[in-house]
Image (cartoon, rainbow, N blue to C red; front, side, top):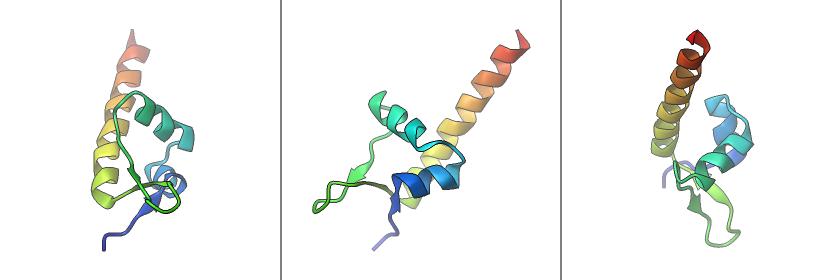
Length: 68
């Protein structure tokens, strides 16, 4: 079984606030898996890799807007 990361764990590993993950979910950028028993959101390592790319794109967008 693959390791599961909670929203808090994933946010900490990515260096973003947990609310950022909820925003990405709300806007359709990510789709967390759900624990069937407790209905908790969780992410896999592959999910984290994809979210790291989102974070990088977001950072680049902010950097370019600062240059204007």
